[in-house]
Image 1 (tube, rainbow, N blue to C red):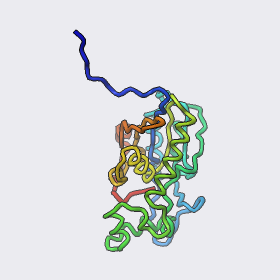
Image 2: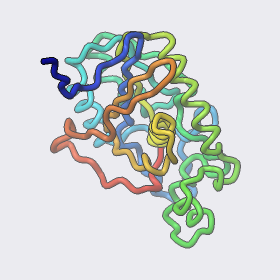
Image 3: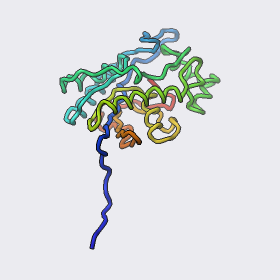
Image 4: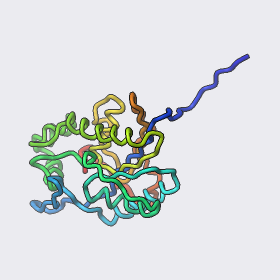
Length: 232
């Protein structure tokens, strides 16, 4: 008599396994009026010492996996986070500009962090309520961020069928990509921890979320408490 056991997920032929890694902790915007350096209009703070330790922990976590390619955004903090893994694998990451963080318009260069800590600022209140980047003056909208970042991942999938690719990205990017895969509002994926690992599987017709915000590799390295307003 035939039986029909419960089965587990299997990666479809031609699919691309994508590991998204959020960069390690970046420098704090702790001085009013002191901006981060900008790169192509985006705030570009480096990692802190904690962020560098988190990058090493990520490298240790992933170096034994079969990895076919590494991708980073154009911003310093993703390059720094990818460096330990790239060195271990003797691979050179590919820069993908469309994986950069949300463009914050008038609030770039650290001002966003200052304003979001002002509990009574009208735009901060509206953002916390809606998780809509469009309330930030001059910023990308949620739809624009999702279109840009999902387009980048589709191109990576087209280039790497049947392969495993690790992309070092940003908190806002992770929220956009996971919400796109789930067909939901990105607020449900806000607040990814620094150096957390997320797993997607991409086919031409469908995206699958296989893991979200995995920080088991960080151990005693430390994971600061994330806030829903956290980005970059």
